[in-house]
Amino acid sequence: MHKFSQLSVKVKVLVLVVYTVALATLIVLLNVLFQPAIDANYQDYATTPYDENLMVTLKKREKRYIPSTDDADKNKEHSFWDVFMYLTKKDSSAMVVNVHGFLTAVTAEGNLLYKEGKASTWSNNSASFASWSNLGKTSNDYDEKTEEYSKLDNKPIKLYVSIYYEIRNNETGKSDFKNFTYQVEALDLDNIEFDSFEERLIDNETAGKKGYLVNEGELFDLRIERRVSGETSDRIRTYLTAKSIDGISMKHMIVEIYAQVANHPTDTEEYFSDYLLIDSYYGCVNQSTIMPSTNYVEINKIYNISKIYVIAKVLGSDNQEIITKAWVDYQKIKTY
Image (cartoon, rainbow, N blue to C red; front, side, top):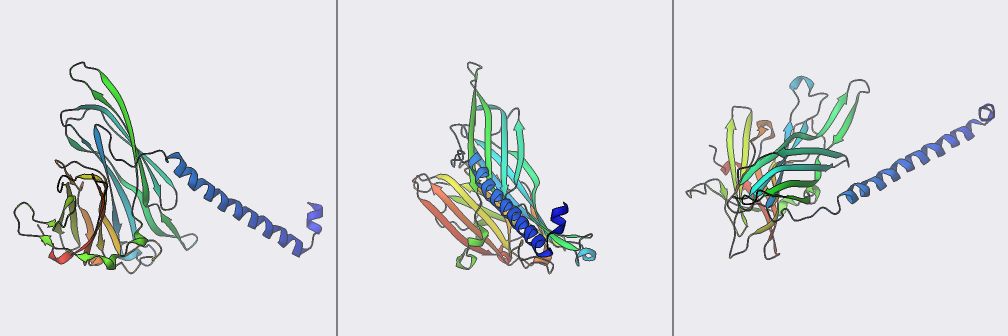
């Protein structure tokens, strides 16, 4: 300590600078090394969303909130992200029991979020197996002590699921234990060119098809339901049904539905876009199942929604990918 105290100020500063740079470099290297380690832990997860008995569908949505008027000068708008898991039996008569589902979500900041769902018995062909409300948060909050904003982006980007269950033989009473995995990565919002989308109409007249996006060769039908909720907000809900065309059916899907909004004056460009993810579908579902939103997404009318965008990448049983890029005039969607 005595010798160090005798060093010149310049040498002391130099030592501190070198130490700081070395520490910062080490932190960066650890972050770079850790992210591949996260992916490596799940690299063996399958990209096929089913096994011989079950299909899995994952859904994700954003709930964006506006701070109260009193706090608008300090608190920014923020979003919570919900994730849902649906399971569909391929054979409705199959006795599937003791189902456990494990979810790992990797966020935009590289954090890991873990959740578990389970069901001891299951009589339905399809069921909302598990839901995790407010799984992740995107925010830019004001710290009273530091008088600075703390940015957070825990939006789920990659989803990994592992399903364990028993399939019971009704004749013998014996059970086989099964397990399958599935992984999917959400589309990168920054790489979606919304200006390239083409307008698509909503069918408001055909019986049984009211509210549906006019189909132009998609292997799914999508219904967009709009409801008015008082004077301050609108509610949006979607339903998806798989379909086959000329014997070709759905093998895998990524379907994301966005609302174009006018952001609140206190937004931050780093964490909020003009596009709010109101619903999404990842995985697969059979043709006898209608995949609904769990509930409506409420959107404050201050956002002044103008368009709904649908982007889909669906792989057919012929291994050909069908890409959909369509937008719908929000005002032309009838309210119910």
